[in-house]
Image (cartoon, rainbow, N blue to C red; front, top):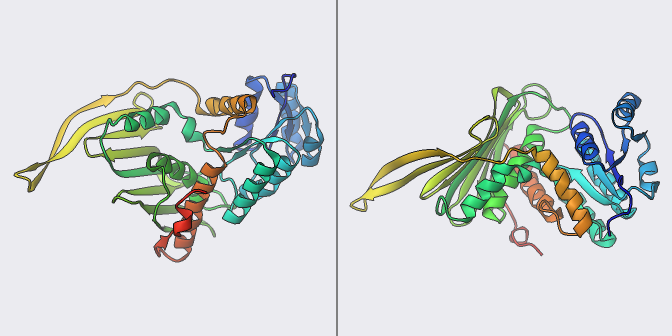
Length: 338
């Protein structure tokens, strides 16, 4: 049941990305309290939004009028904070990744079942209007049978030191790709290098699925220009989601391969069409979806299972990365959801 007061959300971790969550939940009129280690940050948000600020996470959990906790702290802290919040009966939104190990993710899943709380993972792109529309077009058969998917997430900085570029950037792309295939890959291969420190600055991931469908992901924070592009290739066309583009977020290429005398392949390219996309901030839509799930008690679009699936691929990719590109085959038990 929806609480009978307006402000019931706490945001924990108000730094690089958390500040955007603070802004959105404040604009939605539900922000009750912010929690961060920095007194300067807390004071800033007290003045800006008129909300309470605390440094003690336990104090947030003790607040009876806080019904939902939004966690945007560093990734290594996610599992512990999420489990504590669920144990206290709060609904939880946690930024990606859900956890850093599958073992921790499964502990979170158990805690969520026990508490009967809403648990949503912050896979932002799933709420981007262009990606939502792209998924719809693929489902409708716009590009025919899926053949190949690739995603590039490249930029110059921000360099992280706590997690490598695979864990920092690739969750977005893994989540997007799994959403088209609706299955985990049968094998994962990853290569990359660390130039600036101890963690990899660029990484290339290859995913192999059943029915000869393949995908690859290229992520880097050493790229000279920004590129966020998802390309979905079918046997009768291609859809391109270019998040950096201002006026062509989603484009359809009417192209296919035809065979002359059933032997000679010929590429046939007819036209290129820019598809209009709703203008809306994906983060605002994501935050609104979390509030809707709290009210209706529905399973979020990016649920615990979604987070576990992404983490399964991430962990396999990390294993391959550590083994200098050795192919990692997923166990049969991992390919079927219980």
